[in-house]
Image (cartoon, rainbow, N blue to C red; front, side):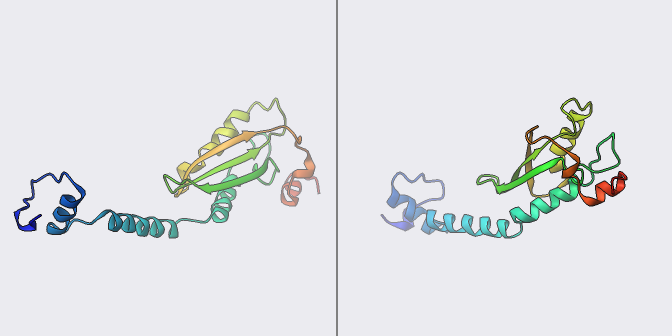
Length: 156
């Protein structure tokens, strides 16, 4: 194939023609494209928080959410049992799962508190979503409260 006869509006019909076309018009080949995408992905990931750093940022946000019936945030109140974060392979953003409970299964503000926890991604860069799992086993008790929460409630 004569590379000089290829025109910009030609449509390559074989791998050989595509290679010649790309060479003439300085188009990257698939290996170059893959390498560039890999570099961009690594660069993007290097600027994202680690799973542990994201968990810490979520804890900061949880400490801003107060139980409407108590003068204590839901994290120090001991309502958060677990936080697990991972990087989504497609979006490259963090997705986290928060396992929490409520002071009572009949808590009238339960949906409000769950919605506030689910809204955390709107306030944190790099966090795509939060899945909230509300459990009642083990049941919440005052033993789960931090010392600061116990002090705020006059229990210490």
